Amino acid sequence: MEYAITTEGLTKVYRVRQTTDRKTETREIKAVLDLNLRICRGELFGLLGVNGAGKTTTIRMLATLLEPTSGTAVVNGFDVLKQPVDVRRSIGCLLPGERSHYWKLTARENLRFFGTLYGIPPRALENRIEQVLDIVGLSQRADERVENYSTGMRQRLALARAILHDPPVLILDEPTAGLDVHSARMLRRMVQELAATGKTVLLTTHNLQEAEEVCTRVAIIHGGRILAQDAPEALRALSTGLDVLEVTCERYALAVTGPGLKEEGKAKEPMTGRPAIDRRMTENEIPEEAAIESDRLQIEELVRRAVEARCSKCSVTVARQDDGYKVVVKGRKVADEFPSIAVTLTNGGWRVTGFNVSRPRLEDVFVELTGPTSE
Image: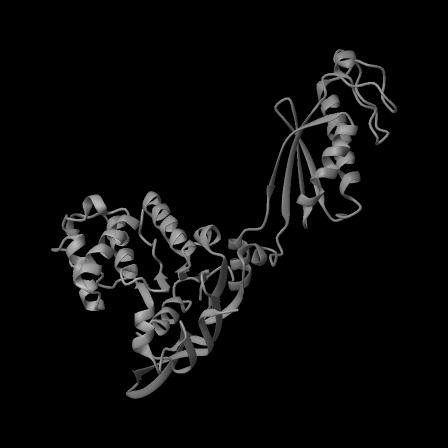
């Protein structure tokens, strides 16, 4: 497998002098510690962490803007310390707080200026400017001054500048930070489309929903260390949280005759042995509360029977909802039990009207690994 970015023991330690009680001491701030990454070509890789976790420090070392204290980093086959110029030619960067464009110039003039710095020949540059403006959706506003652009438009222009020289590797540090919902969605879509063309994208974010949506693999960094890295779905499996399966059901209006059933027009005899209450025959004989309680207990017993073989520690609760009942089952991998639950309820005289599964989110894994509060 060919890698676009690799790091081995990448470390950055800042040494800060502090004077206290007329004494000067040197304190070490360990921003990144022993970082090991393998990012495949064409991969959209997310680096997740809270503010101060080490994301930006890592990005700046990979972009040759910051020299590592120790360890190695190779980008597109070039060592960041030994071949920094080749690394810079291979990457396009979108970094927070950088001067990405000149506000008194138009978008086209900005791109022409930076394209000249990249050494792109004039004729090829004009064609490339048109291409990137179209990619980021700024063709119609290309001749307006950047000072009149919205924040989202400026960020799209920054992305256009990053891809202007058609680099194989893109390094994007918090690209959607500060954007409104629509602008952020648009930028995420553009990043996904760029990755689909074969570009390698390293994206940093603390927006876990964003990472789940766009990244093929993610690494969780905290305190300068990588705590876990894998596909989002695989990381969710690390959670100690439980699946939650919600099933809604209602009694069949008419039951079908057959083995184990009463005559047509009456409720099915439940498999549990608990008598089913046919409201058409008994609604005037027993209180509604008793009928509901009988239904609730019957449903609970049916569901427990359906899941007990493989999910003995599952919790089951049943509550009245509208004209039917809502069943909530909590347990490890309980979603896999839905077919068995549906069949058992149906055989017991209940029609399943809907279901929903809530699994542990990437956010749950993140909090479990890093703790509820940042350091």
